[in-house]
Length: 177
Image (cartoon, rainbow, N blue to C red; front, side):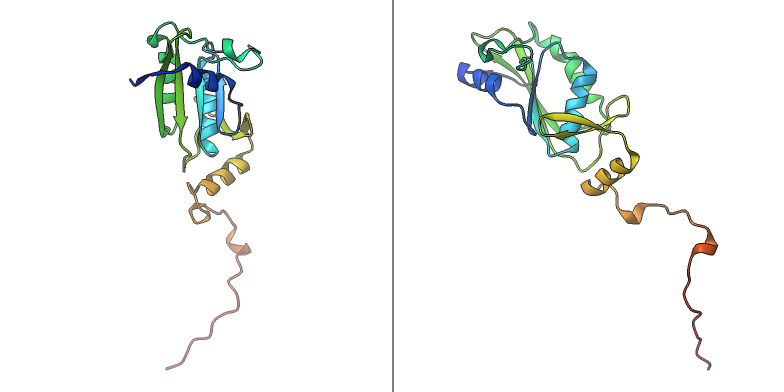
């Protein structure tokens, strides 16, 4: 497991950084389902990064007090497990961050944009829009996302039609020999 010690300035930058289409931060208390939601949303959009162990503005208005990491590295295992349960598996990198003068360890996860449509353990597809991870429930929109990513093409689709509705055009003339 990659553990990195960062300086106070970098820790403060992560704590102050505005949440966006490409960045999110979550409290250490986040549950696995919400970790999956964020990871899937980034993978189904343009990729992105999130840090677990830094509270957002709603939980702590003072950026200097947002870093509230895990007391032990092992306490981050459930968050990693949640990410590894996503199907299909994600292209990602992660590292444990420690900062002198800040409490505990945080987990930074970098998710690459994917050519596949990813789902959480409960089968929900999410996509990142601005600073939100929004569900996609309409099967047609999930199919459109799959086409946009190149995971499927129209040529792969099975079309069901009744034979009598197929217009074969005018009969062809055959040459006589």
